[in-house]
Amino acid sequence: MNVLPQPLPLSGSYDTSMWVDEAIWGHRLYDEQLPWFVMLEFLNVFHHEADKNRAFEEPNGLNTLKYKAAHRLYLRNILFNNPHLAEIRLTQPNDGSRWAEWLRRMKPATTGIAHAQFDYLKKRFHSFDDFCEIVSLVRSTSFEVNSNKRWTSKFVFPYGRDCLYEDLDSNATTNDRRFFGRTGEMLYLMLCRTLHKRELLLALQMRLSKTDPTWDSIIKCLQPADDETMSNERANAFLPYAQHSCFDDLAEDWLSILRLNIPGFDVLPHLVNLAGLHIVKYQLTVSRQVLGADSPVTFICEVVAPKKTIVREISSDMYQSNNLLPAQAVEAFILNIEKSDEWQRALKDNDAFEKCRKLLLNMVQWGEDYDGPNDPLALISSLRQAAMKRHRQHVANIHRNYGREIGFVSRRGTVKLRYAPTDALLKTLLFANVENRLELHQFLEKLQRRYGIIFGEKEAECVLLKGEFDKKAFQGNSRRLEQRLGSLGLLKRLSDGCAYVVNPYAGGVNDR
Image 1 (cartoon, rainbow, N blue to C red):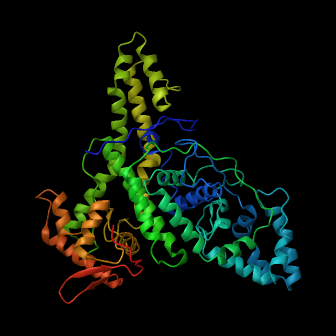
Image 2 (image 1 turned 60 degrees about the vertical axis):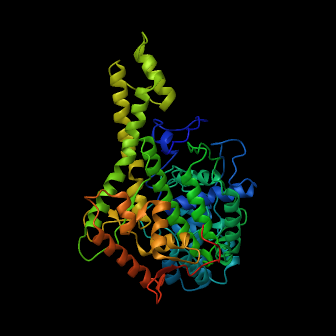
Image 3 (image 1 turned 90 degrees about the vertical axis):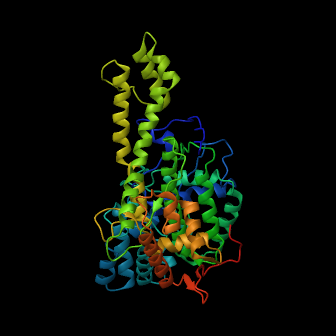
């Protein structure tokens, strides 16, 4: 049986209406912060801590992380709060008038900078046309540039530290935690608490140092030399476990990817996919542990077929079952409070209601504004309702939103969600688990062992009831996977009939 690690005691003050989701998974899992934004927030934390020579360490104790993030408001105003650039380029007759008109318009339009001065740009670009081309090029690789999100929530691709900054509110003054909701901080803490943190630090630093500095230099040209505006100190990130197997699994996968010969920035999407996958796996694994389950989480995956198959039905049912786990964990967490010795003793006290309310204030920071009947049963029932309502707003959506974003969960060919990995995610999984070449059946075994991901009949038979298992359907599913991998150039079938999956970026290290 997997034993849930002992949660760490709370420290500091946390701005939450209650402490239930946070006590189970951390502060906090946030569904609007999709995996790429998790990575951007993580990189902000990582670079700040690396500059202080304390990356992946918690020198002041667990859950004491404090860091600052850049604002880079000159860069952001130029890229995302600058609607007249193309018009000025077309309507003004010469270079001098274009610069003059653009500077005139930017002065009142700039947000978040007290006395904005953009004259430095004229010295850094040969012409206004060159400036426009660079802005257009950087925008084309940015995140959310064509979305209707506020301009302060649009981000440059992380070519280097000069591209990193935090999400800000519409006034460009403070982080309101809408799209940088602390999940990146949780990701950082997970990697602080892995057995492989020293190896991971070296691998990350080596990889980041080898990326092409040209792009970061281009981004730097758009910013004044004295743009040192930083956030106030960010604090109160919280992860309730000092160690967990999910943290080690994540670190091992990142190490596998970082050690491959994947060129330049192409490595980042794979790290993002793995971060998203392991956060989903962490949430579901912890949920099962809270519920007392002793078997690992399982994902039956369909390789999309032209017609509906039993694999699709099983995958959809398993998705629905897994999707309910976090809510069930919240209910179990509150039930454990109700069954606790402290609660039972409080019920026997003469002032039972006040004792129970004080207990909830201490345990989950809830009850001060409760205005229902002075009855412990009504009190705990009200907590359960409030916790479930709050859980459904964000944390309950992690499995679906992250799964869809990384290409793990899909509705392709049906109205129901199920596990149906995309080519991009299949590549990530192969690169993280095959260091040279591996027989297909060994690859499928490894996917089940490491993630609970199942494609083939052998693995499915181990986890499904006899009445659910259809050998032919799963054989067809694994054949379709073989065809998919072959079309991607990642599988070869030899003359002896053996099918091998191949990693084209192999670094020559033995399989773990």
